[in-house]
Amino acid sequence: MIIETRIYHCLPGRLPALNERFTKTTLGFFEKYGIKPLGFWTTLIGPSNHALTYMLQWESLEERERKWNAFQADPEWIAKRAASEAEKSIVERIENVFLTPTDYSPLR
Image (cartoon, rainbow, N blue to C red):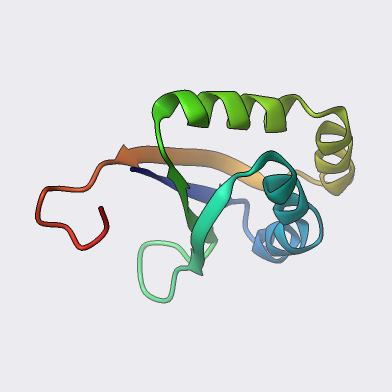
């Protein structure tokens, strides 16, 4: 199992727009492509409260590449993402890391 942690750093005041896009659009595409989210978080205490952090579960990097690339190339997703940012950009930058559990991790 591989866990991908993604952090979307939003432009000031744009986190609500990102949350709305996930709720109304992105999660449907995740389901369509078999992308398994583990959870979504906003920052309670930290350097910025303009961020959305979420984790995705993958069986392998190959699975991740296949499913993520299909999702990113979906013409309907591309159009809906562009429409959500037609007036103003939402995300300033994205960070992601890939984690693999240790032998003693309860998540294996």
